[in-house]
Image (cartoon, rainbow, N blue to C red; front, side, top):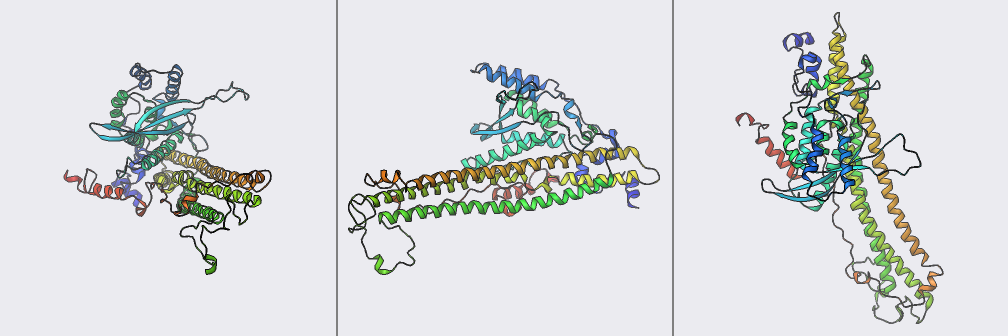
Length: 556
């Protein structure tokens, strides 16, 4: 009863006007097809990328530019613009429900942040965004050395990333884009925050260019290739004024006919939904545990440092402040560190003067103490830098269910319409065909997640293992060096000269056993409210009450 009621009264439209199936234009495409295609499908700036090269060269004419760098920039711009602007709006799905890529993958780095000041907007941070393109030619032999990648660098601020994300969201409604890191104000010029923001923006743009469709979008090539500030300011309004693609996005998706099986499509989305929820829950647990692992590394640093101080206190007979004395008898404490018999005149830990064997062992133990200090520094630095980078990278694979929620809901709603169009005495073959287009799109997105999941988790695991291997290799080298001090010929060499005081002896009275709090990763956009910064919560509260999208928007 309800489907026929909806067809007669609502024109087949869904009651939920906020579902991704509706907002992406998929519903309008399924119901009306090409009749709903009223948006622009071609660019009004057909020579946009040719202009980038000439404008950039004109504005940089007064600067000293190396010819090789200029040639690299030209090649890079050609690489970014090798897809015609009309072709950029056409998307192809192969028989295996995977997007066909028109551009080879490339890397993007966000680096070298610097603070700038504008009369209009005040202070802001600008980042260098460098695209790296590897040369691949069939004629290259295996013996040829790998050529250096071609690169093009542009300067972007956070608001420019907002422009990119906004335009991509409007023009590519059928794909799952990564969330843009939120804008924050508290401490936004501190070194730690700027570095965290840089990493978040690099992970965001890397996700975008890994997507086989998003990386050749017109606004993406414009974002990565426009070196001229004048050209940027001129063309940004064009990209922001383009209407949402809506159903025209699906009108330009091409795929093999009759390559969707209803039962397979139903099974695929249920498995995908279950899997992404499990991955999201597991990654959240992994992020929490990894934070504890970093804390454990800091505690290990403290323990190694305390062991170093204790060993140095032992061979110098200088007391260690606040050192535990459990199990020490009262009579064992009745001595003065300046009494004779504790160390001899050569600084050896012995009551006998001129004892060379004790002198060599004392100096070897001092080297061991200093090696432990170095190991403590390694543990601390590893937790604060190397493991922080891995901890941040885990955000890349978190919350896949939230990221792909729109894809899942669109797939399920389309399956319902597909079943309605294919059943009954008078099946609607045209609507069923349009449903297949949407299903090809959603299943291609699932395949994209599958591919990226393998790459992302492999990269994070290798990054972690490489970091651990590097850490323990450095620790091992220091332990081996200290161990050699107890064997000939180093032991004999150490016994030939008096012991010199260690640089750490002065710290025995005030040992460095405290540690600054570990810097934690900035929260993910989809993290729960208790994990979010106070500034973000305040902004969210204010947003409810102000602006055109607020509850009082009707009064503005």
